Length: 207
Image: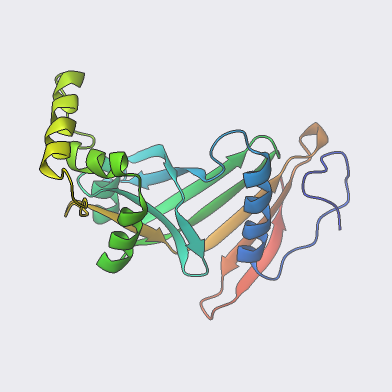
């Protein structure tokens, strides 16, 4: 089997039986090679009127049940997902010259899952979740710094609980597409589509 990182070969790679296993392989290699956050991904959403928006977020958990990220529930991305609970993810690993596109419906994680992840965050990040009105207008940086100080004082000496306006979303893939760079733009694309019965239909796409 040709290595996915080999961009000089023209021999096709073999279609995987399970796209989650292929994701795990590529993700693991990205964690070893990317100089930045290998778990950084573009999250694309659309509001109730279909107007798109995209931003970078961090993948915090993944598996056959989906791909999970966390955010302020009063942010624009959360507003979009509540109004139109479908989204797309894009991973681009420049060091490996690969990308993965994932699309599907999105649901909120349960409170226990959100609580457990929030408790694992650095304390400064926990404080920031209380201090920030994400996506809302801010008159000056000093205002945000004052709110951080107020939150630090509020929870001084104790644990920082998860704010009620902070939680996670999980995207359950309906399609997963793997893109591999080849010379002369003769790239390789493989697409996996959920068949509705727990399996996947797999095939290649023209680049």
